[in-house]
Amino acid sequence: MVKQILSVKQKAYPPKFDFVEQQKYAPENFAKIHNAKIFNKYSMICDQSNNPIEFCLNEFLFWQPSTLRLATDVSQEVENRKEKAFEYAKNAPKNNVITLNTDNDYVYLMHSFGWYPYGHLFDCLQRLYPLRDKKLFSPHYLCCDYRRVKDFNEHMKFLGIKQNAILSFNRWDVIEVPNLVVGFSPSHIACFTLDTINWILDRYINKNVVFDKYRAIRKREKNFILYLEREGAGRRNVTNSKEIIKQLTDENYDIQIFTGSENLIETIWLFYNAKVVIGAHGAAFINTIFCKKDTLILEFCPQNRLYISIAEIPKPSINHKIIIVKGDNDFNIRIDIEFLKEELRNLYTA
Image 1: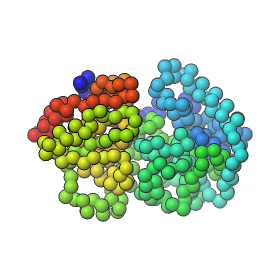
Image 2: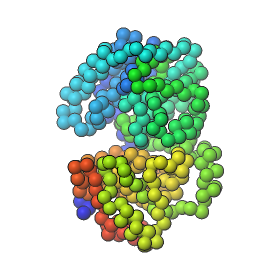
Image 3: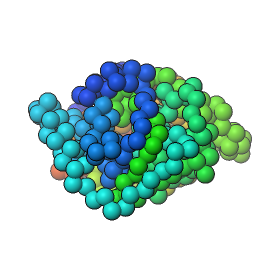
Image 4: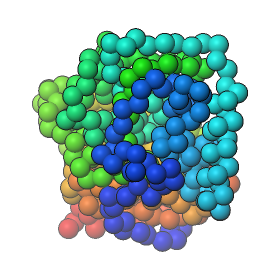
């Protein structure tokens, strides 16, 4: 049963979670730090004495141990997390120390998880936006373990970064960096501004020769329904997923299934050409930044785990609906097929 439908207004977030005066120390959203240390488990930036550099702590404070949005007393939780940061840096294993040479600038592209969860790579990549016009000396790019990211090197290539300029590190590494360059997201953590979205789209679509070739091959396929399948995810599944696919197929809708195993180019192409995107809330919806202006996005969210942050991201599509439905203890949901059919009829007969 549908509880509520939200037509979400897009936002360009201010840095709401600036608990460490980041804007004071990095007013242009970037900083150069000499003789830094990075503890890769949390990608925590510290000074030579192993003290966390406070104005670089925002992402750690937001994500560790879980999103700060879940805290009831945010101010107290921030102080608790600051104490955790200093305690960890003081006692962290320091056996595997890697010292980088002084001949390069090293750009920080790490995530505070020490790896890149699906959908969160763009959080890190948009830190390059404030650096786009900066002169860097033979830059190399410091990354977490990226084995879980499909086509990581393709992402880098689209942004003009060569594979031999990428340095990745293991979970327990301590990296000594003589010249560290840190770009800060100009938006709320895990969100975007219109400028950063346009910058990403320019490089992934408008100036992407590889995408142009792929689009030419599949130019006859477009205006389909893209269904985001979460089977096997363990939580936040759609319990009647197979029924939905069968019913819509029986009604002669052209349906493509997205599983998350697609390569980067196919992922961009699928979202770029979809007329409708349907699915349960999850990280795959970050790819809706590639959708066109008239794409209808139907994101079904359990009422006991309601997040609308992806819907609020400024992007070309202006028709992103959040449909709030009942969820079980694992946030699994059932999509009302009759409601879905009505939405599609309204769209296709308009």
